[in-house]
Length: 335
Image 1 (cartoon, rainbow, N blue to C red):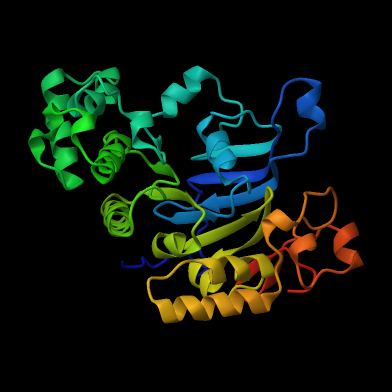
Image 2 (cartoon, helix red, strand yellow; image 1 turned 30 degrees about the vertical axis):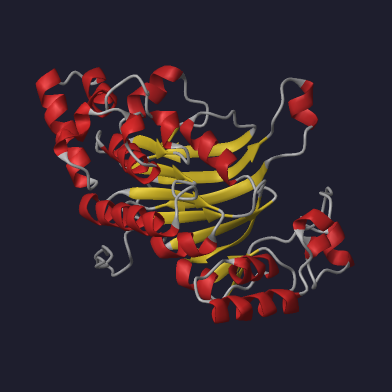
């Protein structure tokens, strides 16, 4: 993938691009009324930005808040604090009318392709639906649907078949086609490949990368496997219990992680070579990080402290701020 030379002002200073998406101090709580006001946050002060044409990977264990962030961006989850800006416009509490207005530019691919495909409709009907809503004629919408299924590696006549006639990997390709048929600016991919076997994962990841490079797309790629995120993302944000533990360039975060939690994630990432897997297991054990099931969530301080081999009394009383360590920002007093 080629890297464009950044734009510069006359004095030589780089021109700051407006982010495609900017999340600032996002807080999300589950529940209703007073219960929501006192519930511990599922997302607690998360900030990051995605530039045009950039892929940011959001990675963490189950319960880290990564899918909740995706839902908040898409308007599927109420936001308790902070803001979400899309193309410079605040959409944090956007009503249904505004959401419809940006629906073509902000799309999603979910883990289960069946959630976005009606089993009673042909693939062509499902793909053409958002185009018809925009006023395209039926014949033009069908042609675009045929072009899109062909682009994701399926035959043009797939538009006349039903979801049940395709494999899981093929249905996920169709979900990608449905997300991209409106030519969006940003796509939220929430565990989009986690249910696929390794070979199909690789095919879908390559497809997403090719489409990004062809169309200048931006992705928020949410996953629990840091090696999958490493393949597609230029930058990575690591979450633990709703807070950012580490963020920075993908190579820096995945190849030279500074936070103990990120180190444990990298060491736990599966690889197909038994010798390398054994080596990673030994590294993981040597880190001294306790398993998630061995500790309970507690309020205050660093959320990772009960699992961390570096933790001290300071970690129990003071939440570490993100600070620059090497090329990454790390929320750790001792990284």
